[in-house]
Image (cartoon, rainbow, N blue to C red; front, top):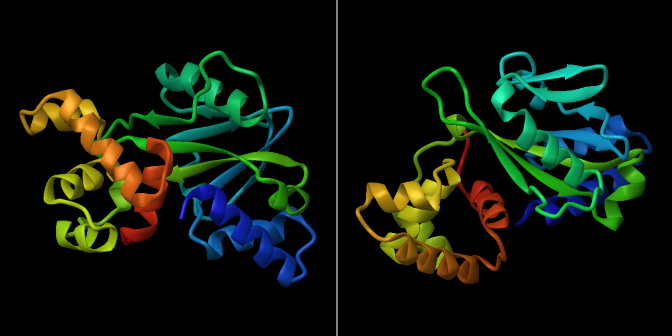
Length: 213
């Protein structure tokens, strides 16, 4: 299930429970496992979900209502992601960004989600979300599980697990001594088998299958 479907499901849950405010919708997000920060059309932070709060300070900062990366080198990419999510027309829209961390943990990954129509009223005044994925909290998933769940080959399962942990196709190719073209062919097969259309959607669906610590 991609994040867009999860957002619609969260909005439906919020409606069923009679939630009329952003705080209630945030609770619905938590129930569906989404660690998210909501943004309004002016790129201001509207709401930070409970699980997202753990990343404020060490990895992310909110200053004057705006979200910033603790690592200043990541600021331009984060800013481009925020502009995309908030509706700006970008020549090269940013759909996700990886934020390096100072310790030995893998980068923190933020995925941008423009709120679907069904969720807009529930999440008003928010227009988009930044969904946080922390690969450090992801358990090692047996390849056999991914192979069975999505009908993957062993190589496809290894690539899927690597992408879900924040690894890039290029890094995977180098680590396994295969060409980037071959990896991208496997990636296309993964997209087809998981019913997704881009890498960010693929990772979103994988993270719904891979259990968290």
